[in-house]
Length: 321
Image 1 (spheres, rainbow, N blue to C red):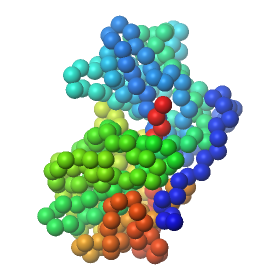
Image 2 (image 1 turned 30 degrees about the vertical axis):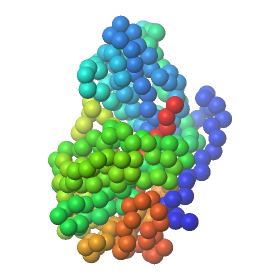
Image 3 (image 1 turned 30 degrees about the horizontal axis):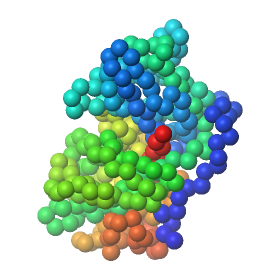
Image 4 (image 1 turned 45 degrees about the vertical axis):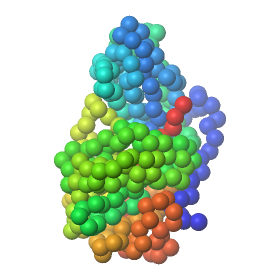
């Protein structure tokens, strides 16, 4: 079986209150999503208690009302400074999102500034949580007319959703938010740069990001966040690849996040070829290689050969209630 298609193995969580060390080094870049709902007078966090792995992201999505997610003691409304979204409002098509990367072991409590103490919840940072693993797995950067392609694959054992993830390339100054598409374990979705079309469960069209650069370029994947959209924030980037030459857009952020080595590159390939990620979901380092027969379908590509260059990998996992 193709090595990158093997799902990661995870130990079962022994309990929500499992004892963990005082500190945990981030080992993953996952996402657990919390819906914030309700009107301007009341609201709820759903779920109210969730478990994440060290290094995972919690992403709060406002689906109704005016609320905040603020870490601290809900009984007296005192913040502890770990995170604070500020008060955000859902109105019309505006659906705010905010993310926090959980690198502090144990229980973090939080509340809504407007509705505490009843509107409160907690995040438990531990290990062994089975989640999705959404990652960049193939890029074709030299297609005719700039109709380039980027593949994202779910390498984990749980369902994932691309909604509000942000993609940034060397051809765009800002990250473009993706629409919601659920990916089953092993499933892939192809992003079509510089092209219009009808989105499906396997294809998404992003004319706004423009064509990728043939000679040297990059692609970066960021966690959902409408509050902090800075591409230089190393806690927000969750995958990266560059080719042709080091120092491409967002490389410094990926290096700061531990996802990439400065100056490392995927190979420059001939027209009609792609570069493909050949690592597995369990690795702390992955490989990008020349694939002469791009498929962008989640099936095995050209990973049976030794990669041309070596690079580290970033990963994203997503767990839904």
